[in-house]
Length: 347
Image (cartoon, rainbow, N blue to C red; front, side):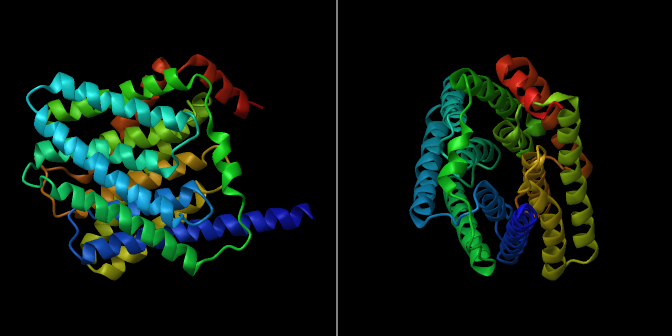
């Protein structure tokens, strides 16, 4: 009986991993075929929706996410216009929003909407500063990315249905963190410093991968459960960058949509399957998939950057984001959380 349960669990994780791979490969290929300005958004959101739960995203929740994108995106465009000449006030409001997002996440609430909100609150200020001609079309880009991510997740579930799925309520209930307010405040400060660095430094103004990687790690990291997990975090995220570099080189050599689909499908199987497994590194692989999609998508994007960036430079950005996040969380996150995380994995 235990062997049958183990086999059933393994088969379920394989289906989820295959769903993730199909969704990200289809999403990125479709966006490239249609000339999307930011082609990784749909695939990125689809991966988040599929990894965060075994059940399909409910229609009401999907509509709510689209509404959140519209409201939050428009709010930050207005705030950027009003406080464009007053950076201290704008950054204070940005930090407050980050705090609210991390507080809800630390309380075990919000689900994938937290990541969506953080991506909006990172991309809108940076894109508005570097590519001010995009203006309100940024909202349309984000709306399209969120909606296509939801549709891709539904199509993946339709292609690979799973009749025996765990209760979603029990999955969501296990997300609370002791000292949520202090933890959220520390995370907000860490992310705000990364965003401020990119906003105030022209050489990094288009480096979306840095703050998005930081946000992804803050949402998924259980404060480095010892050096083993810390080194694993660095290695796996760098693996995502290396895979993105190899994928880009392969697509450059064989520039076709089929080549793009196959290489993203392969990487999705490698990282997406491990992101759903029941081991301490699972969330780290989810972050590595996020890194891969952002790096490959920005490399293929028709959106011009302020400075020329090679893939080696972008991988360096990922390393910078990972090391920065590890150092800052070890300094600012509550020590009781760190001790608890270490105790969970200690033999």
